[in-house]
Length: 316
Picture 1 (cartoon, rainbow, N blue to C red):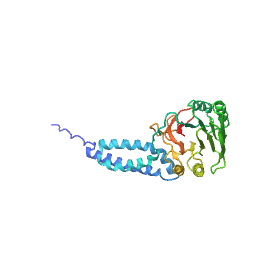
Picture 2 (picture 1 turned 180 degrees about the horizontal axis):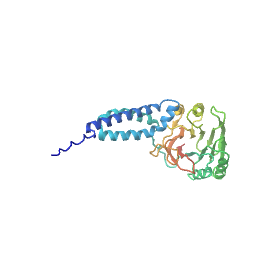
Picture 3 (picture 1 turned 30 degrees about the vertical axis):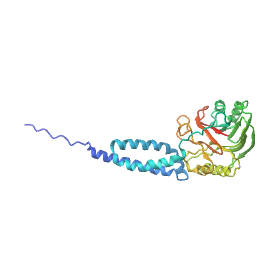
Picture 4 (picture 1 turned 135 degrees about the vertical axis):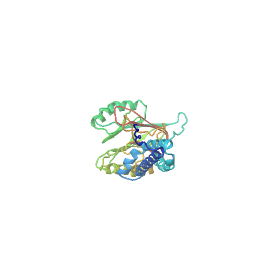
């Protein structure tokens, strides 16, 4: 008589063991995410990198919550800490609401875009931005060729302009004072002009912050600190700062400017991400204001730039 050999022991983990392993994995992932979130408050390269990741950490936390509900409910309470800290870190960058404005009330619309130097798309960007009927168009990362193209494209509809370094501004309304700003660097990548709108004079700053690379971010931080100091000393009642800041919305490098001006929140129920244009992952093109009501703020594609443009309407 042949005796059948006993079956080999099953290598499948029992349900309790699987749940314990899942719970440990979720706990470890939550701890890692919490560390990254806290990093968004640390000045320097840590805060810069963490602030870029911050919006997407919310998605990761949502996935962990779903897995915990399905497979490891006992760690739900543990997930509460990173979720709350993330919400606190994201609060300054959350979408906002438009200010109600009576029909026909005076307003000024300002659009801004980094047109990407040597892209050959400055004219297309300028024309598409002009098609919005904006009152003021600010362009950054201009080289000689793109500046000439933008000037030609906008000359008929925007007779008032000023350009310096890599930034330029075109206006339907007269431009009064105009000055180039170095903001602590040795070259000009920023400006201040006064736009004399019919109902009010608005001081408009256009900024093209220095780039950020591993080990090279002091130039950008110097410029952001410089623009904060400059607007703090500006006596104008109505101030707008637009441009490419090369800093994500929650970057600690923007804190000094946030203390002087209001960060304009997107009013289209999004985070207003602007870069890269093909699939925006972060918002590095910003709008700050003082003494003006935000009626709307959104983004749009224009030309073949790798940045989306910001489009903001202010009540005067």
